[in-house]
Image 1 (cartoon, helix red, strand yellow):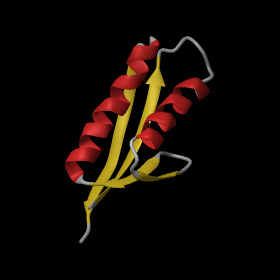
Image 2 (cartoon, one colour):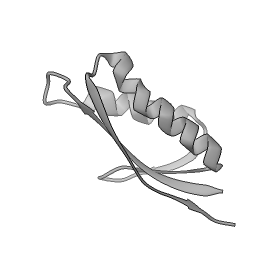
Image 3 (tube, one colour):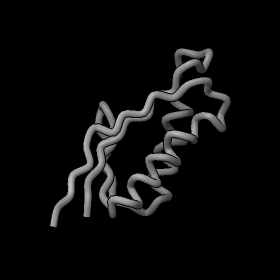
Length: 82
């Protein structure tokens, strides 16, 4: 198993409110079925490394489907444990 800390930051939205974008990202994480914990600066998700990286890709691409111009994604760490 692995832990991944990730932050998705939509840029170029034309608004100061990001709540609808954050809500859609959290919904995608919730629907993934993986264990996760929200924090003030990102989300920690637990799963298999390959699945986490695939989810990271989907999370990064999601705001673009909502007409966001740019997305800044930070993966703070992926840690493996036995």
